[in-house]
Image (cartoon, rainbow, N blue to C red; front, side, top):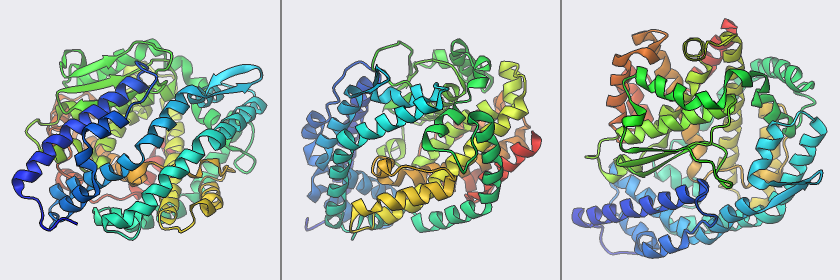
Length: 498
C-alpha cells in the first residue's frame, strides 16, 4: 500500500497516460469488430501501459478520493484497469473464439456471432430451436469456462481494492445500486399485468404461441418484426439518419471528426457500433446496413453515441470526456434510437403506413427490455455477493423467467452480464431518455426533432460530455429526478394511441 496520495501533478500525468491507453484499446476494438483483423490483441496494449493497471496504482489513486467525483472516476478507471489486466488473456480468447467457432445446423455451418441473426430470420420454429441449442452447446463448451475464469478473478481480487465484494466496490464508486434495484422491483410489480396482457397477444400474433408456451428461441423472432421490413429498407438507413440530423442542424457528412465505416467485410459485426477512439477528434460509426427495424434502431442508437462524443468539448478532463456516468451517453443513444418508434418521425421520414401500430409494438419491446434489465440488475447484485458462483445458474433462470414470463435457459448465467454493473447504466438511461423526451415534446412540440432550436439545446448538452451524471443533467434541464416509472408511462401512452 502506498504511503501517501498522489499530488495534482502526478494525477495529471496519470490522466494523460490513461487517455492514450483507452484510445489504443478502442482502436483495437474497432479493428477487430469492424472486420479489419481476426485477432483481438489486448495483451500488447496492457503490457505497454502496465504501470497504469498495477494494484498499487489503483490503491494510490484511491487515497486521493475525498468525495470529489473526478478523482473517484479516475480511481474507478484504475480499479477496472487492474481487473482488466488480470483477465485480458481470457477476454482476448473469448473474442477470438466468438469470431472463429461455428455451429453445424441442418448441414449448414453458421458462425457463432451470426446464429442469433439467422435465428431471427428463420420462420421455422423447430429450426430456431435447433439453432438455439447449437448456440448453447458452443457457449457451454468454449465460452463459459473463460467467463467463469474471468469472474472468479474479479471476485477474488475485489477485496484487494478495498471492498469485501464486487458489488460493494461499485457502491464505493458512487453507484446507487440498491436504490435502483428497489425501483426495479417496483417497475416489475406495476407492469407485470400489462406485460402479461400485451406480451401474450404479441407472441401469439408473431409466433403462434402465448407467453406461457414461448421459449427463448421464440423471442428473437417476435422482436425481429419481419413484417415491417419493407418499411425499413437497408439503402435508406444512412440517408434517413443524415436527414434527421440535418433537421437538428448537424451535417453528418461534413463532420471531419466523424468516420463512417460502411464497407462490408466477412467478420464485420452485423450490428452497428460506435468507437470513440479520440474524444472528440476521431469518432467512428461502424455500419453494415442490412435493413429491417432492428438494424435501423441499432444505427440510430449508435449515431446517438457518435454525436455525443463528437460534440464533447475538447477542454474537458479525461474523466469528463472518456469516463463518467455512462447512463448519459446511453441516454443520448436511446433518444435517437427511439425516433424509429415515434409516430411523428415515422410519418415524416418514411411515409409510414401504420405508425401508431408500429410504435405500440416498439413500446412492447421497450417494456420487455426494461423488465429484462430489472431482473438482470437484481440477479447481478446477488451474483456478485455470492460465495458460490456456479450455484447462481438456477437463480438466473428463475429471475429472468419470472420477469419475462418466457422459459429461460441457464446457459447464459455468466455471459449475460456486462462488467461494471452496466445494466444499471442502461436502466437509468431508459428513464433519463423517457423524461428528457417528454421535456423536449413539451418545450418544442411533438416534432421536436425537426427544430433547429432543439438541436441547439442538444449540442449544448452534448458538449458537456460526461461531466455531469444523468441525474444532474436531467435535474438541470427539467428539474426532475430519474424515475424508472417514467418508462412505464411512456409505454402506456404508446399503447393507448394504438
